[in-house]
Every structure is written in C-alpha cells, then in structure tokens.
Length: 302
Image (cartoon, rainbow, N blue to C red; front, top):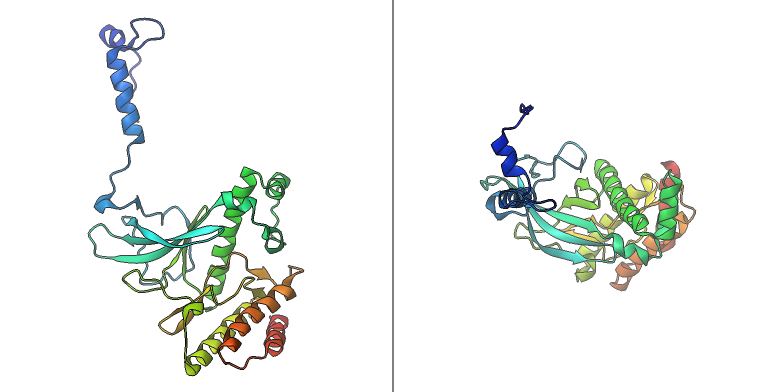
C-alpha cells in the first residue's frame, strides 16, 4: 500500500484550494478533467477487438472443454454481425482468439432482451415450476416491472444454459454451451469456418433417403430429451439446424419438465406433431400417436 503523507506543504495546499468559495483553480479543473478521461477511457484491447474474453467471469460449460474452444484469458472477442433476431433474444456471431492469431474460434452469442418480456404472454406456461424463492422477485415477475423483466430475461438465460449443459453431457444433439454471463449465453457456432451459419431444417429440400435419415436423427434427439424427462417445448423445423448432415436442436430456453409441469403432455404432443407434420408433408410416413406413446414410455423408464 502506498504511504499517505500526514501533512502537505503550504505550496501544495495553495495550489489545490479554490481561489473563491465554490470555484476551482485552473490547475484543479485540469486535474479533474484528466481523472475523468482516465476513469472512463476504454481499455487498450489488442487487434481492434471489442472486448477482452469473458471466460474468466462467467459460468462455464461442462468439462472436458472441447479442443476447439479458446480458453486462454489473454484472448479477445470481436463482434462479426447478427446471425438472428427474435422476440426474446438476438444471436450474434463472435470471434474469440489470441491477439497473435495463433488460436481462434467462432461462437454464437445469444443475448436476451429484458424489455421484450413485457408482452411475452407465454412466460407463465413455460416458467411453471421455476418460481423463485423470494416473494419480492416473484411479485416483480408477475407484475412485469422493469426489475421483473430483467429477472425473466436472466431466468431464460439460466434455464437454457443449464439445459444445454445437461443435454450435452448425456450426448444430445445440441450446441456446446460455452458460458453464461448474466443474460448472455455463448454457444458453439454451428456452421462453417467462414462464418456462414448452418441452414435450418425448414430451408432444406432433402431427397427421400436424406429425409429418412434426418427423421431418425430427430427421433433420437426426442428420445434423449424424453429419457431426461424433458420436452423441447417449442420444437419445429425452424429451430433445428442441419450441419454437414448432422441435426442440431437449438432455442431451448423454454424446455419443459414433463413431470413437474402440468402442461407437459400437451407440450410433448405439440413437439411431435410439429415435427412429424413437416416430414409427412415431404412424403415420409410418420405415425404421430405411436411416436408420442413411445416417448412417454421413455419418460416412465427414466
């Protein structure tokens, strides 16, 4: 700790004191201006990046960390653009790498917006069973106050990160959850090295052989969720990516606990119906009732 002198010289005091009550000397005004500039100046971030890595600050994904992930605390993050805008969150493309360029990876940064939850009427159904312990927080959420909307946004981020971590650990077809900081969730970017995102299932026009293979992958993904007692809650061909023939489920903040949520059967049946209808419309013979029954059997065995 730096020593603080007990007394100051008269010349120092005379320089610091205002010449008149309520007014500063020119020297003091200049000193305060320099202080403000230093206090608010952006840190010197190498390579024109937008921020230093937040890896050391957030909740991290499950171990072992993938080899492709840059975990060095010397890394920096650079914003590359918006991948997707949605009702509750925007997804940005982020490059995380070392300043010397020796290692880098692409990440999807999903950022929940608290202001949108004032009108998000489905919160109640999806958040059933996720009530917070503090009555003040529950009241704020119910009343959609500014504080409550911030809590809802963070609840969605927490829920999605926890679900992805859980599903990744059991081998589900989901992106690797890198980390969570507040309402930002960083995920494995599903796409090419050039930053081109993988297409959604809804964008594809697969032949019959590829269609059947994708359906089998979709069934396997639903079975993994059911074995964990979960349903996606909002599954459709628009929140499934297909990268190099591999199907990947995305958008899981609203995942439903099939046991704790009284609407569980409804959510599961809707997931199956949405997905089966898309495949059936393209010529695949799908029995929705049989698929739903088999999934409930998996839930019962879990």
